[in-house]
Image (tube, rainbow, N blue to C red; front, side, top):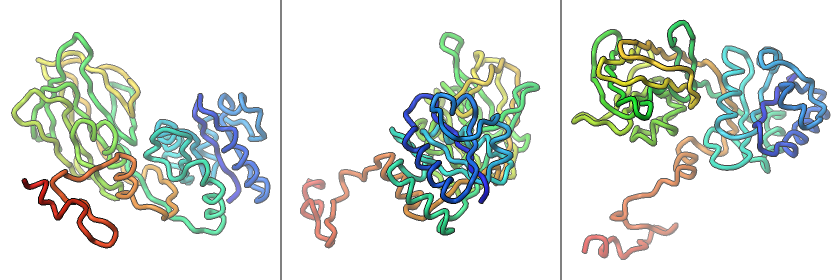
Length: 301
């Protein structure tokens, strides 16, 4: 490894994490790049570059922040050779691999080749003449006061279902734990090659989502009864769609990749960070297998 690129949260204190990366890089004689506007406030020794240069020149990209910073780092690494190591600086940080306290150990593991690379799927499309790419999701969302999102979902040009809802979300497996999950969609392993279509607060009898093969094209047709819709790409408004407009979306495999250290599985992280709980009707059991609720008798009473 010859170079590392830093992507920083614009507000959170990342000085300690940056110092850890700089110290490790100095010992290994590795060049460190940072986006000029981000590193200028830290007065650190990273070499200032443009966002485009960082993706092109880095062998590893280190994201220091939360999930938004991680998604931005993945976009910078899109189509490049550099995998992304996510370091959580606070809050949920679902996409991050390690917390700041574990960063020195993670860098040592990278030195010792004790890591794997996990490819991540993106969803590409166009909003008029503007290309869009998301690693979490593309969502068409009602604008307050402009009416519901009335959207027909076509799969490979064939109508599947129409929704009247607050929003319709097309998510990658990476984004299955974000907006799609909040709207009632399933949790999907990032190893799955598919797109998820999930309606948010649907006003129709059919209120379920659908999982679509990564080889199929998803088209969102904004129907005449719809209001004007905001088009959110990874949570950022990229523009607006009017009734009659169509948005074609297609999955792109291995658009970027992330570093995995093998310390936890996706399912362990999902259960812990989303605070998943079991049904109250299921008796809790201790580590020795004994029931913690009288074998569920109280729950059945």
